[in-house]
Image (cartoon, rainbow, N blue to C red; front, side):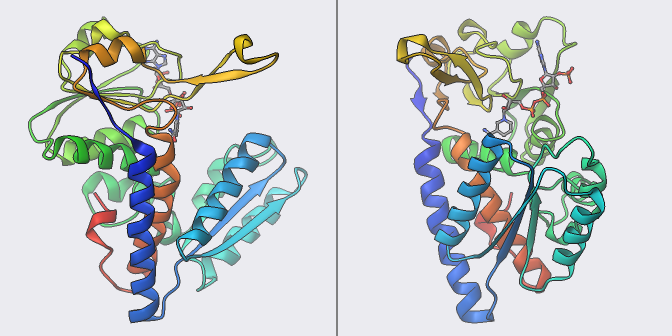
Amino acid sequence: MTAKIIDGKSYAEGLRGRIAGHVQRLKAEHGITPGLAVVIVGYDPGSQIYVSQKAKQTVEVGMHSEKYELPEETPEADVLALVEKLNRDPAIHGILVQLPVPRHIDPNKIIATISPDKDVDCFTPASVGKLQIGLPGPVSCTPLGCLMLLRDTLGSLAGLNAVIVGRSNLVGKPMAQLLLRENCTVTVAHSRTRDLADVVRGADIVVAAVGRPEMIKGDWIKPGATVIDVGINRLPAPERGEGKTRIVGDVEFKAAAEQAGAITPVPGGVGPMTIACLLANTVTTASLINGLEPPKDLTP
Ligand code: NDP
């Protein structure tokens, strides 16, 4: 079997188009311009690129964007004060503090200060609780993106065996909640799981979120299964020139594509969905803050 390649880049492009339509409607019918504030502390080059991408795409879909670049040595109290100011700002519906933050700042304190109503990353305990019991609100961006790709590929997910490899708060755990809501039978595997190959072999859906290059082997994949590879791993690629790297996922792509029914590539699969879902979450929070029902196609 040769798998269908799930094109996250093109799905994300279509999603941004839909988001732009919702933003237009919110402006025209309710006078609301969804606003996203992104805060970055310090000079991590990877984070800088990511934050610039977020700000650019926010503007492209017609939203209001604010970017706060604070120097590395900014005291924790100043970051907390900025978050509190943004909590009160009616032009802002989503607040994202780019992690990691410098060592002298406690990320948990920052997260706890973000108003759950504006928590577009779905990091606060209140947002995590809402996700767990199925109340409306923002949903962790990467798992939301994975769910959209799965639904687009498979339609109904009810009754399917889903194996998630990885149990982080960022990906694995919220993914498990979302797939449970879809009526999948969910198994969450992790570093202490015995015979991971055997666990994965029983999966109709595999979501790999481990952070280990090509750890999930092609012959672990059940024929016809759908494979969502969240991993982003950078490997040296001397064939491309000195100091060059290439990005691979957590799944042995070529061999897995021989077995799977459908599979996401890395890059070009889940990656592009994450920022698009951040924008989707900002439309959701802007709607909820103003007492409107969020667009159904942007929520789980
Ligand atoms: P974490 O490091 O927080 O979690 C990794 C998980 O993998 C842990 O639960 C760990 O288990 C598990 N694990 C580690 N080794 C093994 C093993 N040998 N067998 C089984 N499970 C194992 O990573 P994240 O969830 O934050 O990210 C995972 C990957 O996804 C990374 O490559 C990251 O770069 C990528 N990512 C991509 C995004 C995107 O937009 N595409 C967004 C976010 C992340 P244990 O809990 O037991 O330690």
